[in-house]
Amino acid sequence: GFALGIILNTKGAVALMMLNTAWDKSILSVPTYSVLTVGVLLMTIVVPPIINIIYKPRKQFERTKLKTIQKLRLDAELRILACVHNTRQATGIIGLIESFNATRLSPIHVFSLYLVELTRRTGALVATYMEKPSGQPGAQNLTKSQEELERINNSFEAFGEACDAVRVQTLNVVSDYETIHEDVFNSANEKHTSLIILPFHKQLSSEGALKTINIAYRDINLNVMQGAPCSVGIFVDRDIGLLPKMKFCICMIFVGGPDDREALAIAWRMAGHPGTRLSVVRMLLFDKAAEVDTSSHAEAQGILSVVMDSEKQKDLDDEYVNSFRLIGVNNNDSISYSEADVHSSEDIPTILNELETFGYNLYIVGQGNRRNSQVFANLLEWCDCSELGVIGDMLVSTSFGLRSSVLVVQQYGYGGMVLGKQSNHVTTNNDGFESLVVKAE
Image (cartoon, rainbow, N blue to C red; front, side, top):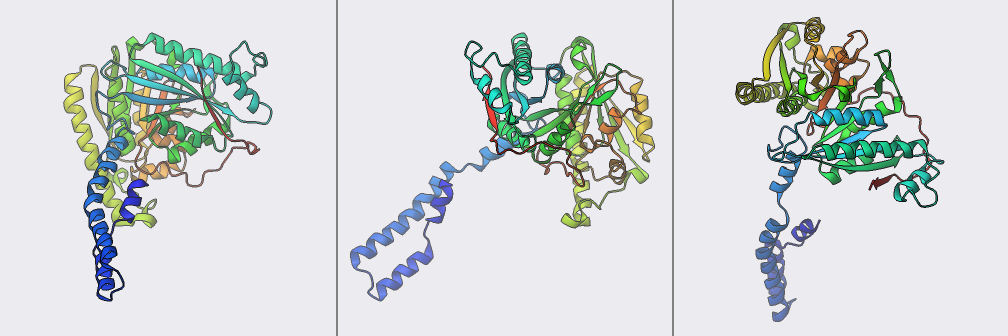
């Protein structure tokens, strides 16, 4: 704002012409004309170097690069915002973050964000307890949310103490579910995070099936993915926290697009963890599967622009995959790379069924934005959970019968997820409360 104000106050040739006209018509005296002319010249000379000092677009660009893991430097700190609703989700996300291979060269700073629905009864009580020591009056009136907060805080603190290269800070958001995604955005911007991890709205039951805990959690995830200020990952936990990390198998399925490149970057980082084995499977599209989907963006960009964007994305995919194979696969025996041909939509579940026989502990896939594939666009219409994309939805569906955890990744910088005709299931009340974010000590 200050830089813009200086620019708007800068005078130029027009001001000098007006001063000369006023001088010719004897409107201005000699002292006044001299002062105004010197002022215009001084502003013209001084403003450019001041703007160069104040406004640094290069730094803005570097800061934007930190919002994705793909562009993050190898020696930079990875900042993760882990959103949770309960202790079980916290345990699962801690197990996931543990796989990110935190080292002293590339440490991890985790900001755990406990999301609490704000209501008339519990809002003030939760806020009061978060700010009061346990010995003060009012602390004995613990609600379920407050007890959950303590357990989550203890879980993340124990994780930070066990890992030297991990720092942990616990935050709490008390807000209406309809607007709580804005608090997630604010926390991510304030903490300069590169990744937001969201828990899936379904949880593994004792029978081994995924059951919905709260449909409002899905709407929160959809809202966050639509406008997140950094990359986003939706984590479908199938008790990943109980698995030993010294024998951990990851499968990354690469189709194409920015989300898949971000997912590959995450998998690549995880491959550095001792005892972790990574298998990258790239689906190569041929025939009908290779047809470009021009319907979704045709009105906004034009068919030619969509086709050109599709070719650009393919070039970026090839460049990043080739870099991964050259640097990652050739220098690490625990990383393998293979390719699978896809000619039609029927080939995709066949490939996934073949991968299931290997018994992977974690699948990492991209959500599918900017994939521009007609086959995937058609399959997306049949998905129960469109926020997971086609591959992710298949991996968590009951018909597939997979027992592995799944991480679905969306890369920052491409406009976020397009919700389309999504219904809003959130039925929370709006009582006029302002959201509350409190740091847990």
